[in-house]
Amino acid sequence: MDSLEEAKNAVIEEFSMFDEWLDKYEYLIDLGKNLEVFPVELKTDDRLIKGCQSRVWLDTEVKNGRLFFRADSDAIITKGIISLLISVYNGRTAEEISSDNFDFIEKIGLRENLSPTRANGLVSMIQTIRQEAGKNV
Image 1 (cartoon, rainbow, N blue to C red):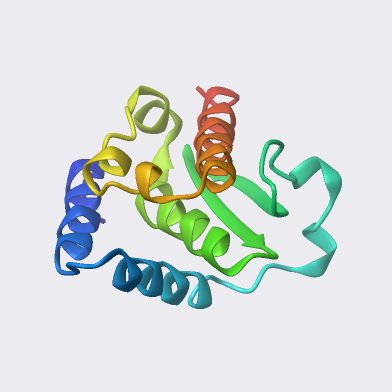
Image 2: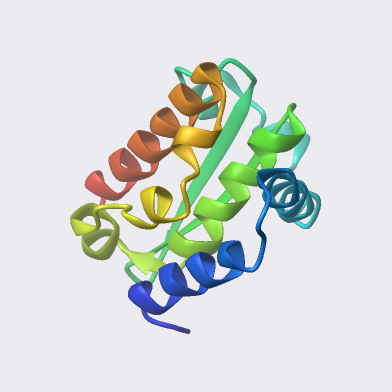
């Protein structure tokens, strides 16, 4: 497994390959399509991320001191965003996640290229991943 910095740099590099935001959105949509199937029985209110306009479910499992995430959304771009976050933070320790600044989000320009409601949802997703890590530090 790559280090956290290597994973973040890989995302930055992937996004830098696209000149237009329309292409970056397409990339996000593709990421969402490749997200692991989320079991229907896990689509419960306690797994819903609060603060997202669309519905986003996040399930966290701790194995050998590492956090593993599964997620789903009823909106295709939002599903891509949570998939992007999972691709970076899945399998990391709670300490790695808690101490990270999630700076790659700014470096790829994601937040400023989302609608205000999606940007708020992104912030809620980040907060929820941090909270999940905080429970396990």
